[in-house]
Image 1 (cartoon, rainbow, N blue to C red):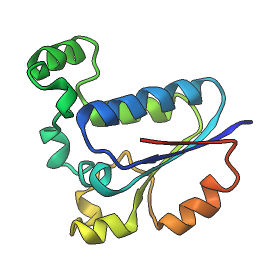
Image 2: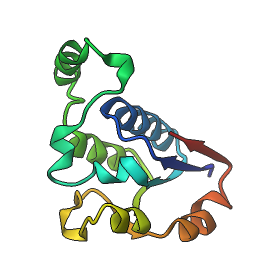
Image 3: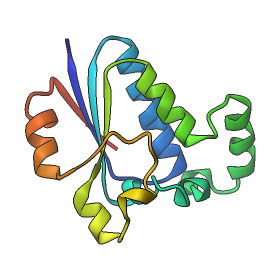
Image 4: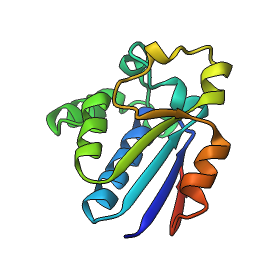
Length: 137
């Protein structure tokens, strides 16, 4: 089984959705996928912040149209997309412990779709070192 490690730092709506799509495809193809959300990406995966996601500057002036397209395609609800990703195969979603400290985020604020809080060092040993491929977003 191929092992894929994914490190996500960018917190824009389009970045998180791109990650989810690629992870879903990889998992459906039989890969074992481990994802670590850290920095800005991790700060967006709380009950409050996930509803306030914004697009990157590349979408300036198109946000409304793209939101409508995502709603039509059922890609507008990040927690639902994360659940779909996990249902696609062997996927583990972790969030960086240090980032929680930096942003003063309590575990109770996190989306339930996340599997664990993990230090970057542990993710490196468990997911990055044995990975066949590592992607960063």
